[in-house]
Length: 147
Image (cartoon, rainbow, N blue to C red; front, top):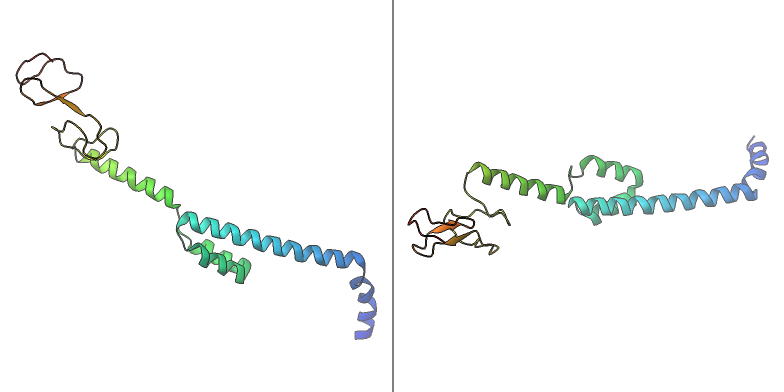
């Protein structure tokens, strides 16, 4: 029986078309695995999730390793998490009702003339009483001196 199956399959398995198909399949598998490893490494790097470890897992376990990575990878990119954190800090600063620097969004005191963080000019001193005035004021409301 085995000889009969071998006699039937032998011409097919040894044909040049089958050999080409087999080599192309191996090439496709190698290229697909390399692309999957590279994508996993790059995605893990952007998400801050140990890129070399996950690339090695995908290299060793192929689609199963990739599926595991897809299940437990961080849900957001590092840049998105940073942007969300900055937005939360800006909203918290607004809720505190304390003034913030228009350039760097760091909290400043109401009487600061410049931002201590970024050195942006916030207010100007009165020429008479030295109190902090808004930049567009033409008269000091404290001592009635024209600016």
